[in-house]
Image (tube, rainbow, N blue to C red; front, top):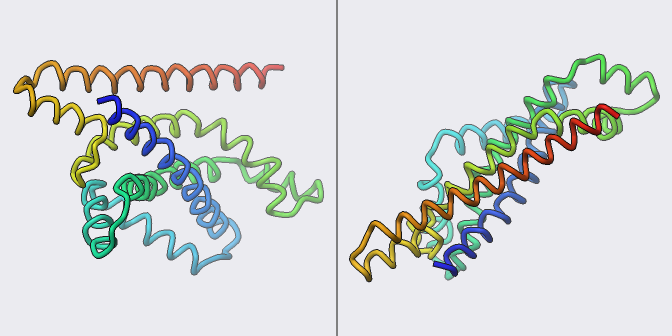
Length: 210
């Protein structure tokens, strides 16, 4: 089960990184298109990506990537899980960040222009700092969901935390303790992450008051 916990944390950590990077890029493309009318082709590609990913279950995406896309090659299952969960998370992160960008008053963009900043500089120095503080709670919830979603990685025979508990159950013929232990470990990780997220939110609020 210890190895399964390590696998779960590894998949979650790298999937979060992919989700943030991909989600940020998609959000910037979509919000730029909506505000300036540019990047229409990229925006269409991003909308297709969002539609497909958000419209299909993550477990189906995982199976397609492993058995269809990489079905003819030998590939590390952990990498497949990271890729699948990262791509899935990126779609939801993108909409969270885009919503944060679009919620910023247009006066903020105009203020940036009046200071002599171009669109990119305005986004970097004025918009993104405000967006980060606004969307932090939603991003935190998304990452908690991602942590729990990795429990389906066993569908490709990856020995994550849930699969490790199931293996113990099959060997001991006792379902209660192994599965209860898995649930408790997930709960502890979620509580720890929620506490860290809450501390970060309080620190950001305190910085605003200074």
